[in-house]
Image (tube, rainbow, N blue to C red; front, side):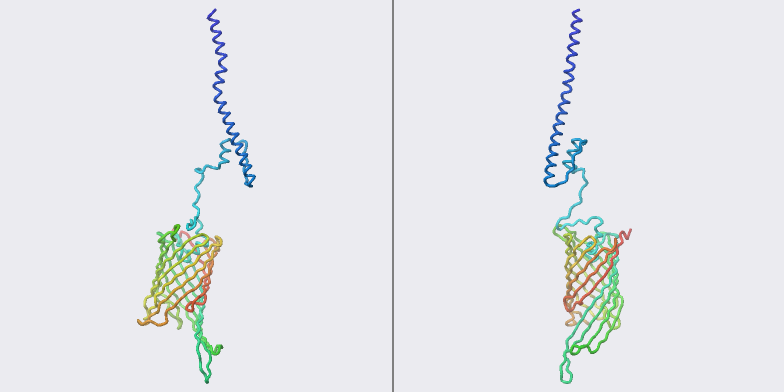
Length: 383
């Protein structure tokens, strides 16, 4: 009987302790849930403060959705994880311009390429037909005596030239480029005698013929960094394949000439600064030895839009005296200077329209010249 009473007491004690054990097991879970609720409350309070600040400064915000978890709301406030975001492309800085894929078709890059300040990528071919009209007027004042009277007179020599040129540029490996040129020239010269400010008689001659074939090779030696420019070296052989004169009119060809040139380019988009220096040596022919020529030019290209660009250039050159049968021709040296203003625009993918006007600044330079060209580009020509 005592044993049964003892068993009954023990069973009652166990049953009374079971709720306490269950409550003890549920205590950590309830504590964790309470802490999560407190954290969510803090996050919501922070969201309300952020929204209030955004409303003050007028920034559009995205309201938190009630079905989002606390982790999603926190990610919405803090923004995406930077490690999970795709890497951004490098931004341009002063003196450093990153040309992205596809931007080589911009009018600015195309204009730099046709002027020799930028080389084509390997396998890319550019064909440029060009027409140039040039006008030059020379006048030599004289004094004539007739029947004891002295009259003011002048001999005028006016020339009009038209040059059609086909230029080819092919991008090669190792940052180099092959360049070819084939011109055709037509020239008309008019002689006018003026006495007492009135023309008395005139005569004219005209001639035409193929010009000298040009073969050149260009190579990029330095790439632009924060302080140094791109540097391109170029050597060009101007052959003697063209005609020296036709019908008594000089066409300006027929001599072998070798030209070395350096071109520097510094970019600060949308402006590109370009400068160049060259030396040309002519070889003797017909017992005539043209003097060497030192040339320089500098200017800038400006991108008005991806499809249009402008350029402004000053060019100058000094040509030493020529020699005839080994003797210098006194007064045959020339000083040349001109100002060039031009523009380019993209007509279609791969097709560029170029127009430029050159104004002579010295007596030895042509008065003005107008040039129109239409470069066509063919990508992956060698593939």
